[in-house]
Length: 77
Image (cartoon, rainbow, N blue to C red; front, side, top):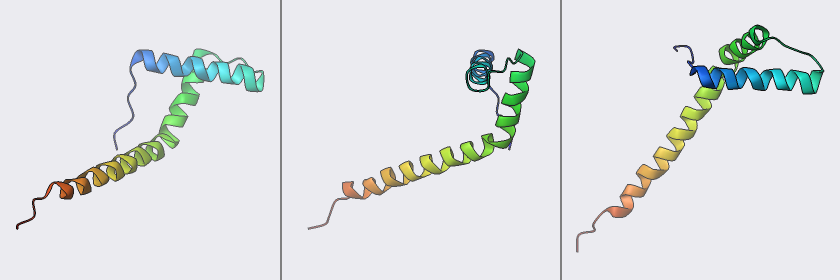
């Protein structure tokens, strides 16, 4: 699986969120570099699991929608 790529804006938003979380929950100040390292770790370890769950959810939704197609069948008289 190829690495998860984020836009610059999204990456910075996530870095800011990580910094806010550490400051609020752990009373710990992180630099952008440290928060980026935490983000990279999360993307490498949790990212594939989250992605796979999203694929499974999309598959289930599409399967339901495809089953709805049978409702459009015309019955011969």
